[in-house]
Amino acid sequence: DTKRGTESLVDYTVVIPAFNEQDYLGETLDFLLAQIKDTSEFIGEVIVVDNNSSDETSQIAKSKGVKVVFEPQNQISRARNLGAKNANGKNLIFLDADTKVSAELLKIVLNALNSNDSGGGGATLIFDSNQNLFLLGTFVPRLWSWISKTFKFAAGSFIFCRKEIFEQIGGFSEKLYAGEEILFSQRFKQECKKNGLKFLIIEDYPVVTSSRKLVWYTSLQILIFIFIPIIFPWSLRIRSLCTFWYHRPQK
Image 1: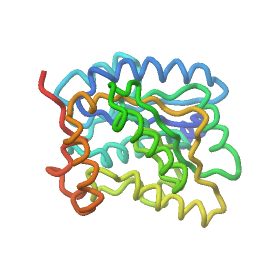
Image 2 (image 1 turned 180 degrees about the horizontal axis):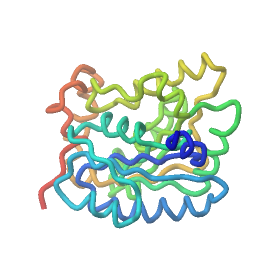
Image 3 (image 1 turned 30 degrees about the vertical axis):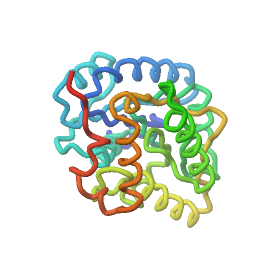
């Protein structure tokens, strides 16, 4: 079995869902590939899932030498699931196209996944800039990191897990257009508990994610986008109500 033989050689696969990410993907991949090189004791691969982009996303990914697969339905959970389906690694790392992960964090994650007591998890995060907005640029990321650590929820921008457990729970819910990482975390934690494994949120090396939405939207718009799903969770099942995660500003 060629695929099984390939899987045995690959320790992990980084899956990057990407919809119209030409402005960020190249830099993210350059940074990621450098970190992978610095963790040469593990063998990794990168898959970019072109989620029906209309820009140069796919071409940029191919120019970096990574594997590219195409998901025609514009939905983050579907893109992540397709990437996992095409992964050769025994472990999975889901990374957003505008997020950077350090070699130090990568080593901690890979050592944890190759131990006998950890099934998966996430990391705290910070913005690359607070855009001079204390509430949304500094306080909200810190609040999320506290929630993440306290309740063991992995942020969608960075999730790591054993592929076998990912498959056991059916991956990310394709009923949701946003917030799928919360439901995934809940299901994954339950499965880890059954298997006597830990679900970790790593604090020492936060991932750095883009603050671009602080520029794209007003503070009021962002607060509305945050609170609508809290008040009306069913809204996450309707794509037209999840434009915060799918809209790209016209240039």
